[in-house]
Image (tube, rainbow, N blue to C red):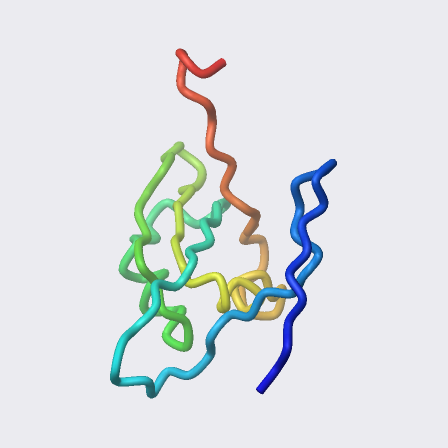
Length: 113
């Protein structure tokens, strides 16, 4: 059994202890909820559809993929994947030449600015 010391830094409010994220996918008694990472996938050809991107990422679980922007020259899509798969999504070798992948930036709504 591991012994953790949880200490809280009162000035910064940050925990100095280590957290653990479960990785056992075979647990049957209960399940956790995986964090999601959101990416902007842009400079896709205008004929590329969300289902094509989802099928292309067959080794990665895709929670959601949809067109975010469309221009006469290229498509931009918003892609939601499990955080543990974020490194795979950010692999340069995975994507076709010219496709740009970056973290999605959520803009504040008008009343939060």
